[in-house]
Image 1 (cartoon, rainbow over the protein chains, first blue to last red):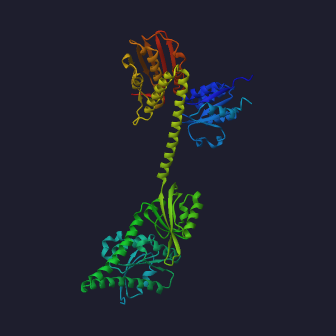
Image 2: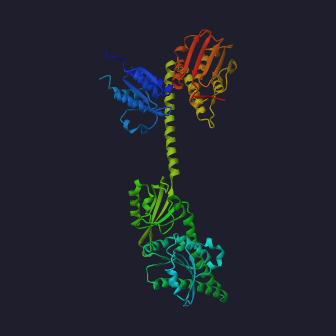
Image 3: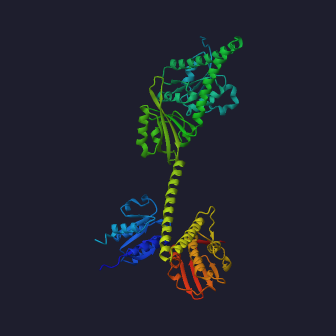
Length: 122
Length: 483
C-alpha cells in the first residue's frame, strides 16, 4: 500500500486555507503544512523534503507567490495555483501551471490533483 | 491705375550695408527707414515710435533670426503695410511653402538675395503699389460712403472686407489658442507651421529656420506607424483619432491621439497635411487605474465568496441540526460583513479595539461584560481577523459559556506596547465548562487564525471555572497604538 501523500498549502486567508485542508483530508491526503507567506513556505521546503504537491495562492497579502512556485519547480514538486484573479496575473514563464479558480469546491480540487499527481484509480 | 511716385519703406534684418537697402537707395522714389540688426526690434527703439510708423512696405532682411516675429511686431506700427521677406536663396523655397499656413502672413511677398537687383526692386515696388491700391480703395470707399446715398452698396463692400479680415483673425486665434497641438507639414514630412501648444510640447520654435521632420516627434518605436498614417493622408484619406506614442522635447514619451487631414490647393492637388495632436496620457493612466481596480474588485469578490464557502462547509461539519447550521452560518456571515465595513470605512484611521470587541458582544449582553485597556487602533487586516475571533468567542459564551446564564461575567483586558498587544478574554460564573467547544470550528479558528494571519498566538484554556482565551500579536504593520 502506498503511503498517504503529503501536501503543502500556501494561502494567506485562514478560512480559505481551512476549506482547502478539509477538502484535501476528505480526498485522503495529509496536509503537511499550511503557511501564509512566501518566507514561511520556503522555510517549510527546506525543513521538509517529503512534500508531494502544493497549492499556492497567487496573491499573499499583496506579494506574489512566484518565488515559491519556482522553488517547487526546482525541487520537481508538482503544484497548482489558486487565485481569484484572472489568469493574466500569472507571469508568462509559469503559464503552464494548472490553476484553481476561487471560489473552489471539492470537484475542482480533485480535478487539478489528478492533473498534477495522476489518477489514483489508475 | 494710379502710379506710385514715392513710397516709404521700413528695412530691418540687414547686417551688412550691401543688399536690399542699397538696391532701394538707387530707387529715387523710395524713402527709407533702416533699422539695424542690433536695434531693429521696436521695443529697443520705443522712443522713436514715430520713426517706425507710416510705412507702405516692411522689408525683413536675411540676417534676422526670427523673421516672423519681427514682421509681426513691425506690422503693429504699420497696419496697412505690405511685408516683403528678403531671404537667402537656399531658404526661399521652404519659406514660400510655409507662408500659406501662417494665417496673418499668408499675403506676404518674398524675394531672393541672389536675384538680380532689378528683380528685388520690382518686388518691393509691386508691394508698395499693392499697399497704395489698398489705401486708394479705402479712400474711394470713404468717398463713395460720403457722396453716394447708396449706403447699402458701400456698406456691404466694407462689411465683406471686414468679414474676410475677421474670419482670418478668427482662424489665427483658434490656431494659436487651441489646447491641442496643431501642425502643418509638407509632403516630405517637414514641419511648415505649428501653434503655441505644439511649440510647448515639442520645444520647436515656429520659424522658417527649423528643418525638423514630423517623424522626429514620434516615439522611435512608432515610426513605422506614423509613416503609415501620413502615407494614407497623402493619398487623400482623413485619419481620425489615431492613438500613437510621441516624444516630447524633454525626451519623455507620452500617449497621444492624432488626427490627420490632407490640405489641397485650388487645383485639388494635395500639398500638405494638417495634424491635430492631443496628449491622452492622463486618460490612459485613468484607464489603467480603472482596469487595476476592476481586477482587484473581482479578486476581492472571488476571495470573499471562497471565505463564505469555507464558512458554509465548516459550519455544516459542526452543526448538530439544520436550524443550528442556519443560525450559526447567518451570524458568521454577518460578522464577516461587519469586518468588511471596517475595511472600506471612508476615512480610515484604524479600527478602535475596544469598539470592535463591544460590537462583537453587543447582540448578547454587553452589561455582563467589562472592558479595560489602553486605546489601540488596529490596521484593517488585524481588525478583520479580530472581528471573526471575537464573534466566535461571543457566540460560544452566549451558547455554552458565561453569557448563557444570568450572573455570568466576561472580562476583556488588554495591554499594548510597541512590540506586543496581549488580550485576555476571561469568563466567570458561567456553567461548568464542557468539552463541547474544544472540537468546534470556533476553537480551531481562534487557535489558528491569530498565528496564521497576524503572526501571533491564540490560546484557549478550558478551565472548569470558565473559558480563558489569550491572544498575542505584534502591532508592527498589523496594528498601531494610538499616541
